[in-house]
Structure formats: structure tokens, C-alpha cells
Image (tube, rainbow, N blue to C red; front, side, top):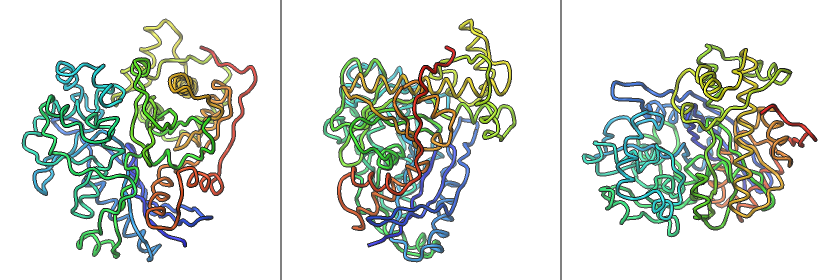
Length: 469
């Protein structure tokens, strides 16, 4: 049995609609729509233009039906933590962007009621100042709302007129019990959040319902919406071609999500101190990982320069033979939008190290610093989980960055396997195909299909190679 399904994959910088063709020995993706995801700066802060994302998703689905008239289903994934507030069917303003500076205002309010130590014991999440519970604590519009929908569930609601919360994305809110994977109603009450504002939880692999009449009419077809790992990293981890338990992964896009897949969460004080998170994965797995600043640093740097020639710059950076400054990519100054070259220079001045002296030197410095951050996170994941890491998989856009992959292999001193680039969309369509009966078996079986059908590249560590520190 071969099935065609559509994946609406919304990243923090861009979105795409992909058509996947899947059978037990076949896995192919075709992009039918790609579009930018540009935030809106309004007087009250930075927002996501979810109306435009929905419009682009509909246009992509219409094209998907055109190229695959037998399309059997669709699923939506996106970045985590951000949400829309509804009263009835009405969206109460555009969702805030997690990079909006005011999102951190709720941190002190929450920690005054529940200590960070207790929060970690309850939700298992790393501290990020924009986690959903902090945002909700600082959002005055919550009092007017009767429903909270995470971004992929919001798009799903507009597609089907049915409201659900998919569990992997719910696990990023900070309000899901890390052990039971149910809403922590007691924690909600202590924070003054009405727990009934959250819709029913559903697991990945649930058929949620058909497209609404107006949507079906517009796209030219009627088929069901299926839940997948709607947090894009959850779908990306499904698409990582891991074939043994000695694998770590780096899902590298705007963010670098670095970790291992486990059967149970790790809730030790050491894990909390290292800022590792225990997010829900597909089939009840735990994504034990940490966030490392990703290619955001490169894209913001090019934006500051007014350039769009990253491939050429990376080629020049690979040939660069001067000294390379390694800086801490996790410094909070690099989180908001802004002039990254100036911020790197500022960091170097504060730490009494030479700032990169040219555009090429800065690109090399960023890539090497990202590799250093990823390598440290891999080592921490192994130490905290008790896993021996024998291979590191890099998926997402970072898998195309040869300089980054080689620099990472040199640091972790084990092979790095790069690809697939579209791991998130692959994980999305694989789970749809399994739900619809075209595939069966465990995640390991799905990943074996990825390994057998997708282009991968292997980078071995260069013996003795060490970059300047």
C-alpha cells in the first residue's frame, strides 16, 4: 500500500507544505509550497502573523491536491511554546513571538509561587524565559479567553473547526505533568491559570477529523487531519535515522536541539542545573535535550550586513586560515533580533579576546562556536542520561553546512551523520502513513526506512584537529 499525505511544516523562520509518498519500501518528499515566516513588530510587541501562515498553508494544500489528487491526509507541526487565545471561535489578537522582550515578565511571578526546583520536578522542562507558563502568567488577555491553542493546534482548528492539544507540544508548556503526561491541574491553579482553558489532549497518531466544508472547497479535496508530533522537534526526531541506542541528535535550524531519546525522563538536580529538558516524544518516548542557539546567529548576521550569500561565505570561511575566536553562543544577548556582529564584538571585548576582523572571520567564528556549543551539549546529554554516544546525527538545515558538521565531528570525536535536511516533514508524513495503515511497526522501523531511502553524509573526526579556543 502506498499513500500520499501532506505535511504543513511551520518553522520559526520559514514554512513549507510537503507532499510525502510513503510505502513499506518507499519514502519521497516533494515541496509544493515554501514561504517566509516574518514576525510583525506592532506597538505592543513582536507577533506571529498566523493569518498569513494559514493563508500560505491553504495555498500549499491546494497545490498538494493538484499534484496528488489522491491525497489521503494532512498534519501540522510547528515550533513550540507560543499560543493563540480564543474566545469562542474568535482569536483575541495575534500570538506573541517568543523573542518578544516582554515575554520574560512572567518569570518572577511564577517563581514567587513555585520554585524552579519544584517546577522541574513537576514538568521536567529546562528553564527558558519564554516557556508558555511564563508567557501566560504575564498575558493580561488570558482573563478574556476560554481556549488556549498552541500554534499547530490553532492552524488545525482553522482547518477542521475542532480544538485539540497534541501531547508533544503540550509538554513544552510547562503545565503538563512529566510523569502522567496529563495537564497538571494543581500547578495551573497555583499559578492562577484555569486548567479548563486547555482543550482535550490527543496523542500523535490520532485522526482528528475531516477538513471543514469551506476549507475542503478551497483546497479542492476532503481528507482528515491527523495528529503527529506537532512540536516540530518531535517530528524531526522521528525522522532521524537512528539505528542503535548509542545515537545523539542535533536538530539544527533556527535553534539547535541537542539530545538523546529515552524511555523515561531524567529529573535529577544535575539535569536541571545543566538546563536539560524532558519533552514528550512520539510513542511515549522522552526527548532529553537542551536548546543551543542555532543558525539564527548566521541568518541575523547576514540580515545585519544586508547580504544573502551564505553558501559563498561558508566556502570562504572553510578556507580561512587565521585565528578563530570561540564565543559563548548561549549568552542571552544573542536571543533577541538585532545586530549580531556588534554583539559578538561586544562579547569579545568583555572577555578580552580578539573580535573577528572580517565578515569571513566572523562566519567562521560563528560556525566553530556553534559546533563547540553542540559538542558540549552532546557530552552533557551522555553524562546526564548514562548513554554512551557512538554517533551524532545532524538533521535539518544545519545538515547542509559541511563546515559545521566537520567541526562538530572534530569536537565530539565520533562520526557525524548529516541528513536528512527535511527530517521534520519526513517524521510528519511517516506518522501519518502509519496512522492511515500504509506502514506499521515501531519508531525504529520508521527510522530504518529513512536510513534506507534518504541521502546521508558521514563526517569522521579529523585526528588531532582542534580549533582555536
